[in-house]
Image (cartoon, rainbow, N blue to C red; front, side):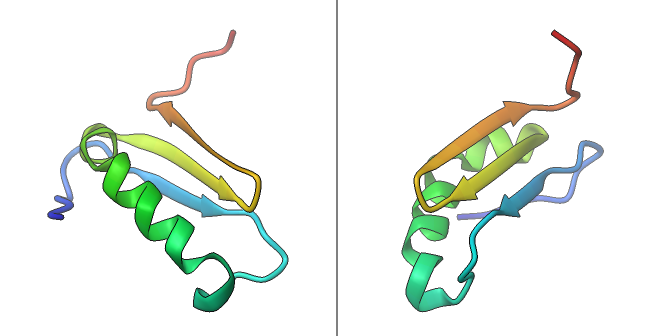
Length: 62
């Protein structure tokens, strides 16, 4: 996986009580691999123990 720093930044947010690699590391790696293309273009990736969400940047109000 190759993540490039481009003009559009990306944010990876981990929302869990235990953020240790043993607790959530595998989920983080899987999410980064699955969402690599979106992260290269600029996205907000939120990972918590129950789900993973992705929003493409820039964020626009609904």
